[in-house]
Length: 507
Ligand code: PHE
Ligand code: NA
Image 1 (tube, rainbow, N blue to C red):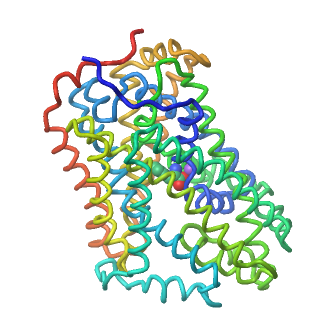
Image 2 (image 1 turned 120 degrees about the vertical axis):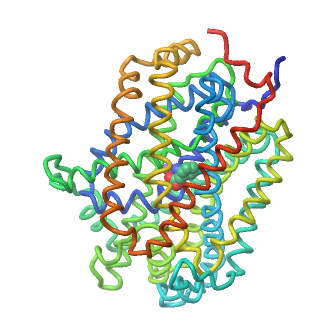
Image 3 (image 1 turned 45 degrees about the vertical axis):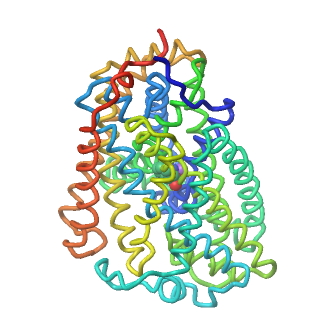
């Protein structure tokens, strides 16, 4: 029985949606800091090596799997080997419960700050405003201490936008949104970069801290240097949205004739290019702020929420003219980058639910977005940032890495990478070389394994972020455990028999 599956309306639509998923908050607030900390321009070497050895091969793997099976991750995995279905569930389940719930809350912060920037409502002490007045941060992850209503309202807004987009058919929802969001994001980002470069002290900071390459930081014969390499692989993995089943889902809507290798290369290259270009804005703006306030650059730069919600507002305060506009521009960039990633996280889970329970995408989207809104509530409490920080650490260092390793084993060894390579090469487009097999079977899983061991050693010697062990077990270990459990439960629901019949294209 032929099943009608949604399709992208155009090649560019798919590509923009995939890039929309990849380009997210991480490109803006994670990449710059990593580069700064890890040798400036020299960081590009491990970063690009990671891109070629792990990023591109895994992107090809996820695209080809989705394209071949025309299925969500759990269904695709179940068809290759029913025992692997729980892993197929784990990826979108983690994407949803482990990332999406707090990603929505962070977009909620951005929406609030977009509003605040119009009046510079964060005042002069941006640090105490963010943690104090705005988040009213409690001192322990266990002290939820009530909901921050402005945050919850904006988070609900983010879920509503996400629902509106994902509710429609892929080609009229996600694709259309991406066709608007991505060009908009590029234009806004370029304006922001251009503006930042003109600020006093920007160019010096960029030259001194971003472009200057300190090769000693990445030397492989030092423990610190090796850590940088591992961090680069981690960043590539996260920044390309790999290991969550998102790219499998998006590729399942591709038509039969598709240039898989070419699309994978384009997605990877454009995402990393975006990070590098956004870095000029970040370094320029911080350089300006440090200069204006007479503080050293290394005291001014941070990563993550601190960069967006403390350092940037401070810099915006210092601007001689058009502060409000600059602020609105920056937070709008974050919102657009964030929403386009959020819809991909939602879609991976909802597509899986649709495949298994054979319900309409409208129904699945409505259920999942309502569930999402409820699930986001803990992140809008006064302990939100603390829970988020713990969840993020455990997801990125464990769930994602384990998912990636198992994915490589499944396709590389169980299915046999040659089978998949043949599929890619029969779909048209750029030829996939046999080195891909080596990457998928050996190099990528080996590097991921090293990262996993490194993270374990680190976490067992030192409690992450100096949180109480109980909190780490509950919010970190707990998320891993609950998502595993849920995956097992979901994989025990029987498939409709016709679903399991492979519908991959004839080879
Ligand atoms: N790739 C996104 C970023 O760089 C993060 C993300 C990961 C988004 C996984 C969706 C899924 O911010
Ligand atoms: Na990214």
